[in-house]
Length: 327
Image 1 (tube, rainbow, N blue to C red):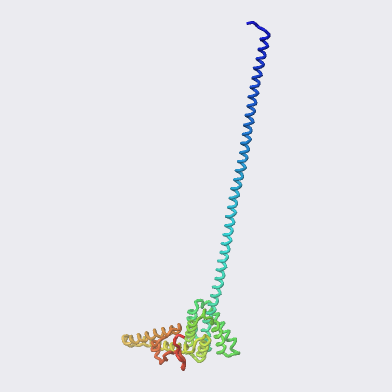
Image 2: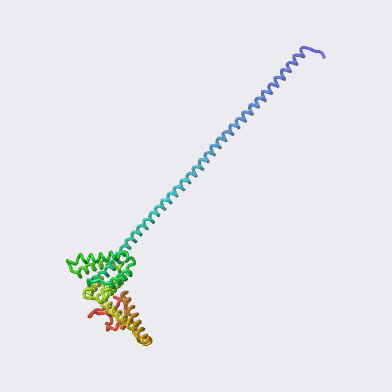
């Protein structure tokens, strides 16, 4: 082949054109690559922004959740505090109620104890009435005192000395029997509350006073004090008369029973008599209880006494019987 410079130039131009084309293609490629990187960066930036927004949203949600839990905890605390306060108030009210109840119960117990002591003291006044104190009277006093108050033994000696001292302190100015009456009056006044010492208890006490006075047989001073005590206790004199009748009957029945038991007669001869005395004594005992409890005694008790008692022994002569015998 023949060689020419013309051909050489055209070859160089083609080469340059090819190189230029390649360079352009590379530029285009580089531009495209650059554009791709920018797009990826943009997408990455957007992704990062989304992630940041998501993180912030997540944190916001976490804050909201934490806030909600905090509010719930606060509410629970408030509810617990309110419930605790209410429980504390209720507990305080319960304690106060129990304390008030205890104070009231203690005060009532004190009043009851004072009433019982004065009832026992009145019995000892009756023992002092005649100025002589026998062992039989003291034995009976101990028996009655224990029946009236189970705590009697804890203050028995102190009460006896107190009663003696009160009588001795007033004897010079008022005389012995009047001094005893003043002591008895203070005792009766301490028994005035009907809720603590009602009519039935007062009549039961009068029966014990009667039994004390009749120990060894009552003398004039003991009978006088017995009537004085009945008046101060608010018990009608007719009731006292009935009690004296029953007591005398019981005393006679006991003597008769003792005589029959000591009899040398055959038992089958005295057995009917013993049964009769026992039956009469049962009737009298029931009549005494009815009298104290303010129940009508009936004709059976009158027959058992063996006395000609009026139809209504509680009615004074010249007075009309009430429609209700218990009045």
